[in-house]
Amino acid sequence: MPEEKVENVKKPFGWAKLTLKLLLLLAIVVTVVVYTDKKEYFVGDQSNNHVERKWRSFYRFADEQHKNADIVIFGSSHASAGVEPFIVSMTTNTYCFILNSLGSSVIDAYFSLKEVLKHGNKPKIVILETNFIQGEERGIEWGRIQSFEAKQGVWTKLQMLPYWLPSDAWLKAWSPTIRNHSFLLTNPEQIEYNKNTKDKNPDRMPLDLGRFSHGNDYMSAKTIALFDSCSPNQLTKMEIPKSNHYYLKKVADLCQANGIELMFLTVPMWHKTFSHYDEIQKSMEDEIYKKFPQAKVLDLQLPYDTLLFTSNAFNDEYSSWQHTSGYGMQIIAYKLSDFLLKNYASILPDRSKDPRWIADLEDHFSFVYNQDVPPTSVKYRSILKDKAVGSERIIELAEQHNEDHKSLILKIAKPSALAPTFTLVCLAQYENQRVAVPIPVQSYMDVFPPRHNLYFANIRSDVQILDVITIE
Image (tube, rainbow, N blue to C red; front, side, top):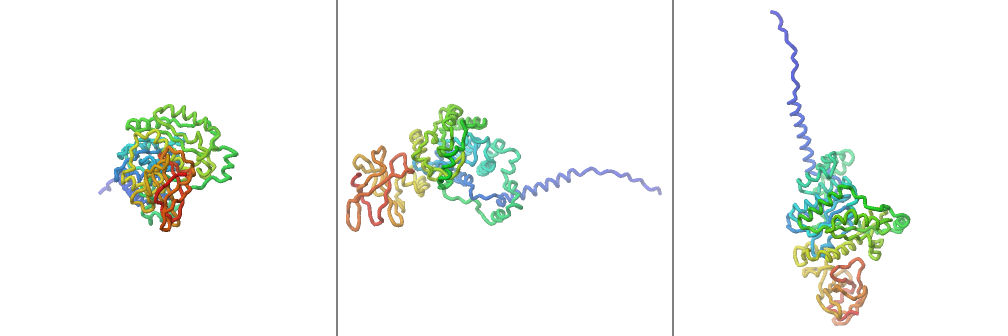
């Protein structure tokens, strides 16, 4: 029987099987990435990530507690390290949030404002801190990623992503595993820490309004000498990217559409940081402020307050982008509060009698400097309120109980003719006797509430003040 000839037929390539295998492999990779992202095995060190904490606090504030942020500040690190929002809140009887990111730009301010509005909050005032207006078009990448991750709104993220990050950084922004997979070789200690730590970035306070103080590492004589020898910022005008002009207009339009007042604030630096700040200020006037005439401007760089913005108001850094100290943040907050009350008092709500507002803020050390002592307070006691003494009116006299002495806190209504130091003659109970006691009181340079003048004195713990007799 003749042998049959079998032709060598070439089989078709198995595209279907290959595609299925590739899809299976992709599904495995995606599952692993999603799992490790959920477990946060590859997140970096979060101890300094205040951007996430402030946004997390805002979402609780808006979505769970159904409260409204009355004043919102956007900007770069000069916003969060330049203004003490608790003081602004207490002095204006409002809630003031700082929702900035490090190395930020106006793009972030626009999408952050959209996120605020999306969560049912409609601020009365939006403040743009101007140092970020002349910054880079997008800002530093890790600061942008922090801001991107901190926002909950997926739609907001999708909208901002093409403008906020280059396309090769999109996956990194969404996934810490993709961003930090090199930890497997370079930082296994961080992975081990993440595996054993449930909360990588715990809240530091129940209500985080967005402050981030760089501390009180005041300027040293050596640093001051460097500034004296050469100003680190030699610019003669603000260099403003075109995109910042575009997004400033979008922020202004968004504010107008929602009945929100827009304001510009310049947080100061040491007065010898700039060699030509008057020219920079003029360029800001021409390029920005004149284009938004509805927006009020508070520039604390010029005219410069040499009495208050001393070397203690700034950190010990020789830089053209110097930051304020915790002490300086308080001064700026009081100056900003005074400006807000003089220009926007008619639109700001008064939350001073709201029990929830009091509960949110009363633990801050400055609360009793700006508000009445709460009846439930353990640390403070109100001695008297609303008493006329000569030509002055005492709003409140209170005492703070310390370990070895008492501190008197005296609030005098404005306007007042009193000097920074004077004598308060009080009726006091001491060793079962009532006696008239002269007590020297004085004001503090960094504490000046806009609604009243504030004075302090220390007395012995066994002396009980009953009343005020006169002021000398």
